[in-house]
Amino acid sequence: MKECEIFSSLKVPCTSNTVVRLDGRNFSQLSRKLEFEKPYDPEFVRIIAEAACLLFQEFSPLFIYTFSDEISLLLGEIPFAGRVEKIDSVMASFLSGAFTRKIMEQEKFKGKITRTNPISFDSRVIPLSREGVMEYFQWRQLESWRNCLNGYSYWTLREDHSKEEAMEILHKKKSSQLHDLLFKKGIKLAEMPAWQRRGVGIYKKMVKIEGLNPLTQKKVTSNRKKIFIDWELSLFDEEFFRVNSLLK
Ligand SMILES: Nc1nc2c(ncn2[C@@H]2O[C@H](COP(=O)(O)OP(=O)(O)OP(=O)(O)O)[C@@H](O)[C@H]2O)c(=O)[nH]1
Ligand SMILES: [Mg+2]
Image 1: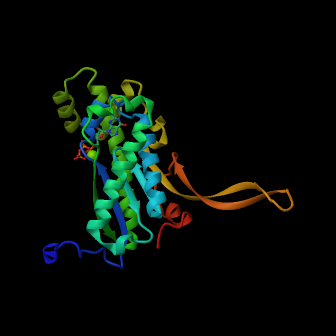
Image 2: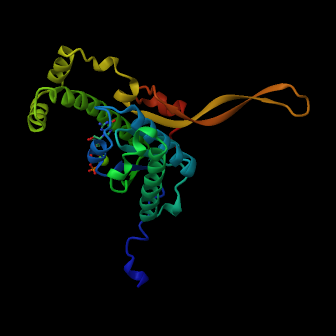
Image 3: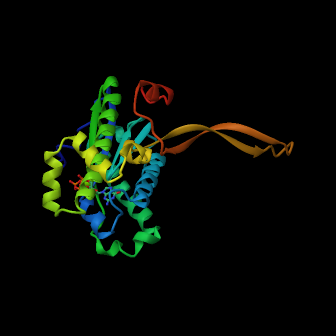
């Protein structure tokens, strides 16, 4: 029967840079059942960032980028000898467990969690060229910006319109018209927190650690790379990828 497992030998091309993108399944429903704040719930965003940190600790990627209910990992070492089925299934289940654990630790959500089905994520493996890496993250960051504009616009429209009407208006209007609509309500997107507009990055950063030399009992400082959640991400450009050594 082993020969029936025809996808098990599917592997990531060894010449590629590899991204894995995970996305929450049915999170529109989850956000309703757990009564997330709209359009952004800071606690939910913190939980997803912390769950992403657990992914970072487990799989040591070069970089993680997250917004809304999605997480992209830029892999360094490719785990599981590059086996696609294994990478997808283990990462998705690891994240589901990590996210559920984090949400259960949160006072605001834990009482409501029984209203939901078990939480799951989908996962896909994306092989990229070296140049494709920056292009990929710029594409997701643009999506984060669109999501920010659409989210604020939708919930502003919902103040006076039904779900269907708000969706229809949203589809018909150009982004400049949506900005005008928000501006009239006193919402300036440019002044919203960077994590809402540009998403959140997780990567290793050099930090100074203070310690005590046990022999001399003198204070010593050393440099160590620590996992860092960047809530103030800049726009992705070559400089960002170069400075943080994100390209192989
Ligand atoms: N209220 C609120 N909702 C959020 C927040 N972040 C994500 N969401 C919800 O998560 C959804 C994510 O979009 P999608 O991934 O396209 O929708 P989905 O329901 O998860 O659908 P599938 O991924 O196809 O299963 C958004 O449409 C929102 O409903 C948040 O901070 N606040
Ligand atoms: Mg989703």
